[in-house]
Image 1: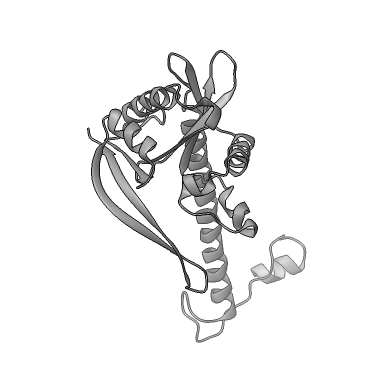
Image 2: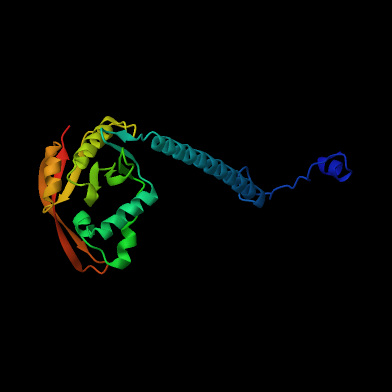
Length: 238
């Protein structure tokens, strides 16, 4: 009894065999061969997609673990802890109230563009500077890990108390040694406005070396010139 007859009489539970076109060879172009190849290709694609998802999940897990390794930095009078979104919003509100947006960024964006500045970028490490005794936030520090570029700000009422020098020393030590991120770094770069004499004195006192003087131009979306920012670039040598 042939297979098809056995199936027909209920002795076999398989689907009937359909012969391919007479001209079809192995892996040929008939509908059955094409269907098999498409199924096989899709199956391999699904496996590849699943492996990609697993790799991405593993990478995300490693990034989260790396973030957990960022410890709070302690100095004699201060602690530097990882900044939250609310901390960053408070910092920017302080800048506006103190009328120091221009002083900090070298430009004063129109009111409708202010929201674009209140953004925390994932590749930047943000830290709040907190007074140990009172628990008050006295300023902030940030560093862009890709190019080691440093930024800092101390609120007006806490200036001339040596807080920025103290925070910078602890921050630089933790960043360069790898205590902050789990990876050691060779240097720190800082850019400051040419007219910001307080920051210039602070950086030079902390051991930063003046590397170059330059300027940065900003333009509108239409290409119109907006302003020129004169900067001094400092580098903390190894």
